[in-house]
Each structure stands twice: as structure tokens, then as C-alpha cells.
Length: 132
Image (cartoon, rainbow, N blue to C red):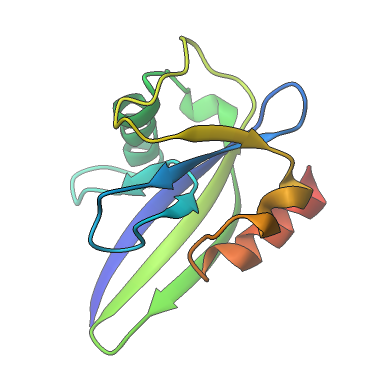
């Protein structure tokens, strides 16, 4: 079984809203909302991968000292296993911009159920909702 690790970020603003983005023009999970983040490369730590992905997607700088692991989920099929790790962060530097031209939106964690997201996100959403 192939295993990959995906680091995701629950970026929380001063209103206790979380940032989500709309995945468009993609083969998998097209038109689903998701947390920013992505695949951790073999030569980097989970935190390094998350910092890199957030810079590539949102053009902001986050520090390893300002992120904390919150929860995880596992998505499996016959061939692949994807481990999704959700971190949270309340502090960043720079102006938030979607460099992937995805729609981004701040939402209250209690409202995440209104958005079409991958099934593995629903458990993480409930943990985030209770934490914020």
C-alpha cells in the first residue's frame, strides 16, 4: 500500500474564523472546499512541508513555532493510504493571496458543515469546531 502524508492548516483569524479554499479544475475532489496545505515531500519534515505549502498557496509566512498539531484523519482505498494532519495557526506574516487562483473564504468552524468537503475532513472539522 502506498502511503502519503498531507499537512493541512486551520488558519484562524482574529474573529475565530478558519480559512478554506475551493478546489477547482482538478481531477480529484473538484469543486470541494478544503484546508490549505499539501503533500509533504520525502526530504522534509511535516512542519517544513506545511510552511512551504502555505507559502506556495497563500503567499504568507508561517513559523514552525506558531503552528500546533490538532488532529488527523486517514483516507484509504485498495491501493493508497493518505494520512491527513491538521495543524492550527493564528499568527502569520504577509498579505494573504491565493497564488493558485482558488476562491478562499473565512468561515466560522460551526458553519463548515455547509460546505462540500472530502469525507475525511468531517472528523477534523468537528475537532476544530470544538477547539475554536
